[in-house]
Length: 293
Image (tube, rainbow, N blue to C red; front, side, top):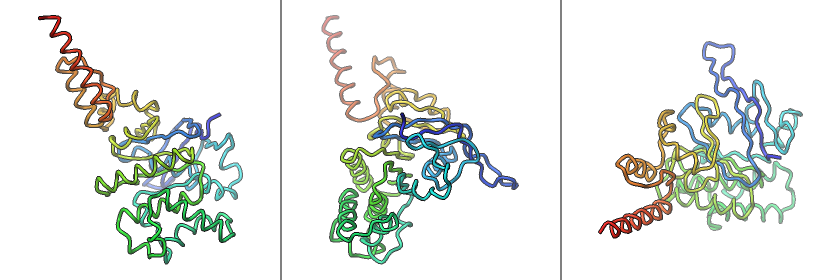
């Protein structure tokens, strides 16, 4: 049984007004426990709406969201409990920070979840900070005195501290420099590896998705356009381009080489894959050249 399932999910913004917009229609998907899912799509494709529905922040107009086989809206008064199980880090999550110290900000979620013991709370806060790559020396500082990358990690730690079964991150590296982006992604990968949690990463960066995801969910005009392994998704560069998306740059290079007649695969989507594929091609070319001589 899948950890998360959606069945014919539909959501409309501004229903009954002149600004009515269908953001999601008929979305069906199944996500297994422990998977790392990349979520991509052009602006307005339904990505952010989908993850807010999975977290229970939005209620679908129709359709169902199942967590461990149970409809999350079966008991609306219990929806708050779902948000502890499915943690959501918003885009630019540093705007979620509000407490006097970083420590208190990270502790806010666990305290509302019902953690009362001081020692247990301290363990949770410090573990979450470590997972997020936040130095212990920063815990007693005001979150507003942190750098951009540190604020981002503090906000992520606040969600991790609730120990969710599912961690959803909506553009967690947006606006960061390459070094800050790499640090965040590295910490997310490490968190997933150590906890076995299910992770959904929403991103416009095809390179980021290619580096971390097991499977990729492609959204398009409120529908699930494709949902497959990372390799299979990035093989379909032409299809992605048709719906306004790009493949990773290294994939585009190999697509162009293929057009020029080179006998290379088009399922190359990371630099490691590219190095191996290039070496394999060069070795093959040398062998053919030797035979020709």
